[in-house]
Amino acid sequence: MEIGKLKEVELRDLWEYEQYDFSTWLSKDTNIEMLNDILGLTLTDVSKEVYVGSYRCDLVATDESSGWD
Image (cartoon, rainbow, N blue to C red; front, top):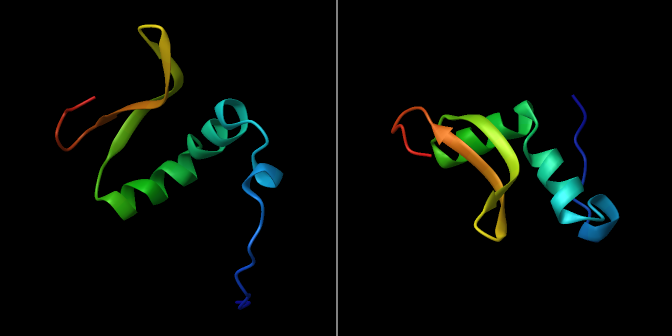
């Protein structure tokens, strides 16, 4: 195991376009699993950039423990 240092970076260097880059990164299974662990949820059926009226929602998912979308 290697120990490293946290390094401050510009977010746009990692994810140039939020709707394409960040949403795609966050919706990956391993990242959703980490999000579930941190938030105490069980998110499944994750969809990204879903239209809600004339706007788009970054991520839409179902929480299996509550059944909420």
